[in-house]
Image 1 (tube, rainbow, N blue to C red):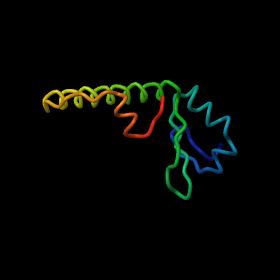
Image 2 (image 1 turned 90 degrees about the vertical axis):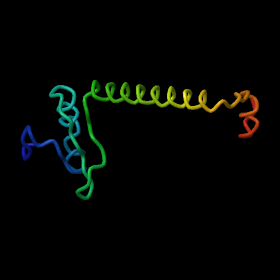
Image 3 (image 1 turned 45 degrees about the horizontal axis):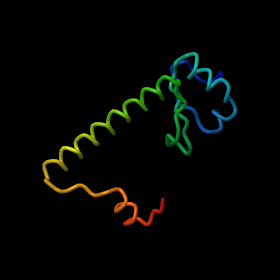
Length: 95
């Protein structure tokens, strides 16, 4: 990867494939995010594991916020709850 500087965190698919171990090291040791492109368009990023964990945590928080909002909306609607067995039956799921 001699053609790339430390600041250059975008590689083509071929470059990333050719220098896979170095790409992983840049992310793991250098805490760099390396974007891999195909035909000039970003398709994937190699990121440090801690970045992936943070992303998952943020997604979990958003899911929780959406679930809380849906529960509040349901409570305000005054609708009765539906038994799980009825939902499973509606979608053709047998237990």
